[in-house]
Image 1 (cartoon, helix red, strand yellow):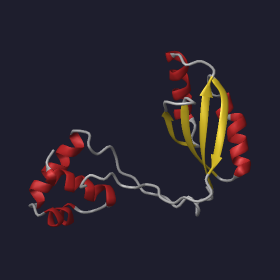
Image 2: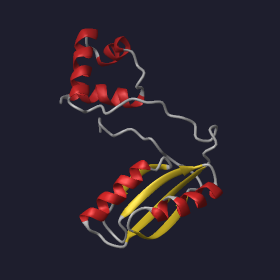
Image 3: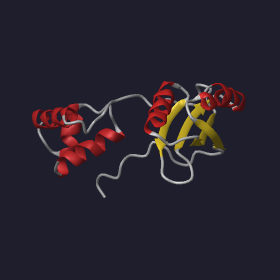
Image 4: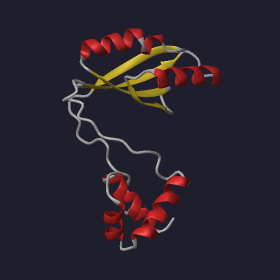
Length: 152
């Protein structure tokens, strides 16, 4: 991994649809050399995928919520069952095991508070081992989907 690789990754995370020719011009390499580096970065797992960013408001998903989840037991089997169930819930955008006063931080995107109430009762509270939750509804998204600071 050198500065050129980091530059390629920085450009790709900001514009995943850039053509190889445009990428080559921006980093100052030939298209063939750029393509070789790109394929290597993919093969080595530095790039984990590509996708479109969708406008959640236009699609009717106006509520973003963060939920602290406290489990009744902190054993490997409870952690595994919770993680498996969280991965199956389509409303869950992210789920992180954390250190501190609770066990998981869940980021969920839903249509509205009514949809959140159904998600809480039918999905989240029914996940294995859930003892307690605390929900934080987002009033304003200040920054999301920020790129990694590769060139700083």
